[in-house]
Image (cartoon, rainbow, N blue to C red; front, side, top):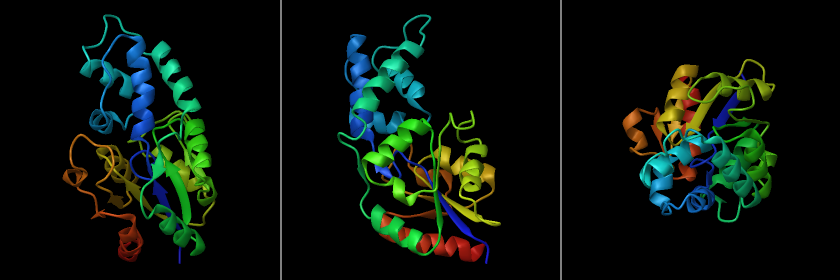
Length: 224
C-alpha cells in the first residue's frame, strides 16, 4: 500500500489564531489612527498572508491611504506578532488526539500554510505541535503561495514517503483550490476563517469536529 500523507492548513484549521492575529493587526491600525477590527472581521480577512490581512483591515477602517506601501506596516505587524504569537492562540478541540492517532499509525503529516514558514514553526513549537509534523511549508519556503499547488506538493515531498497518496485538510476556498490544483481530495472544517461558508466551495468531506476527521480521512484514502 502506498504511504499516506495528510497535509493541514494552519490558521483556522489546526489552530485558532484569530485572537493573536487581531491583536497584531490592531497594533498596526492603532499606529495609523484607525479603529480596531473585530474578531469576526479577522476571521473573514485571514487566508492570503499578513500583507493581505493588513490591507483588508485598512480598507475596512477608512480605506487605503493614497500610494500606500504595506511593507513598513507589514514589518511592524510581523515584529509584534512574533513576540506575541501564542498569547491567545490554541489548537482546535480534538486536534491532538487526531494527530497522535495518525502519527502512531504511520501517516506522514505536514503543514501547508500562507503564514511565513518561520512564524509557523514558532507557533507550532509554542503549542507543542511541531513533534507531529515532518514538513512545514509557507509562502516563503519556495517563493509560492497557495492556491498554487507547488507548496502542497513540496510539503508532501519533504515527508520523504514512497509513492504517497495525500489528502488536504483546510478551512477556506484557498485550501479547496489548492487541493483541486494538486489533484487531491480535501476535507474542510467549518470553524475556521472564511468570508463565505466553506461548504460552498465543494470540499470532498465536511467535518464539524476533529473527532470526525479520522474516519473521513480513511474514507477518502479508500476511494483513491
